Structure formats: C-alpha cells, structure tokens
Image (cartoon, rainbow, N blue to C red):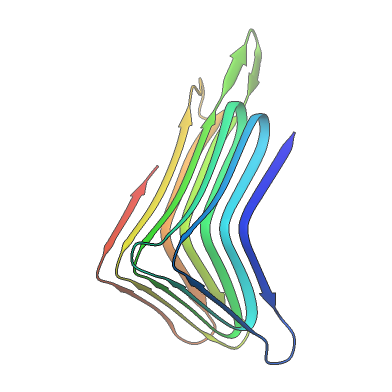
Length: 178
C-alpha cells in the first residue's frame, strides 16, 4: 500500500517564475497507513525564484503514521529555486514520522521513519537561505524492530544546499529527535 498527502504544492518553474507563499494560518498534511509506505509534505514549492514566509502564530505540519508496519516519511517544508530560495519561519514547523515493525513467526516486516523540518535546494545556479525565529521540530520514531535490519529512524531539522551561498540563521528553537 502507498499513501501520500501534500498540504500546499506551489510550482513556477518556467522563465523567471516566482513561487511565493505567505502563510498566516495552518497548513497540515496527514497520512495514516496500516501497512505500506506513507509520505506527507506540508509545503512543497519550486520556482526559478522561491520564497516562503511562515508568520508568527502560523504553522506548517506534516505527519505520517505507519500503524502496523512500513515506512513513514514526513517533510514539513521542501523548497527549491533555480537562482534563489528563501524560507523565513516566525511560527511553528513540525515534521513527525512514526513507524512500527511487525514480526509474525519467522516473517518480519520493516518499520522505518524519517522526518525533515526544512529542506531548501538552490543547486543549479543559486543561493539558499533559511531564517528561523520560531520553532522547527523534526521527530522520527521507529518501534518494535527485533533486529537492526528491520527498522530505523532518521531526522534533520534544517538542510540547506546551494551551488553558491547556503545560509542558516537561527534565533529560535530547532528540535530533532530520532
């Protein structure tokens, strides 16, 4: 089984396309799957120039729960820009992935989870900037594995990648748990 949820998908990839999001409310993407692989992305934005502002008291949340077994992979904000990408967070950004492994007799089913708070990419010809004045949380939990090969969890709070300048400015809280 497979499940995928995206709260906001914003694309402006041609010419001098600008992908701009100003969030003053609540954006949520939630996926629940009994057994299989689930993905949730709060905001996914790509353009020639991309900017996202999550205002004070606003939130972007992505959650995935693989209840019996499987993969649970959550990304709160994913943004890319050919020449520039910038994310400013004054509110709350949360990615939460929870997966269970399941064993029955000699059969084992994996349980792996991943969570990413903010990922920005300007790898073609650009600069990437993340400014956090609020809270960014990335939590990945994998439970009930009976061996090292049956499950795992990984989380990243902020990931910035660029061809030229990649900058992260943090005056808030970044919490990562795996």
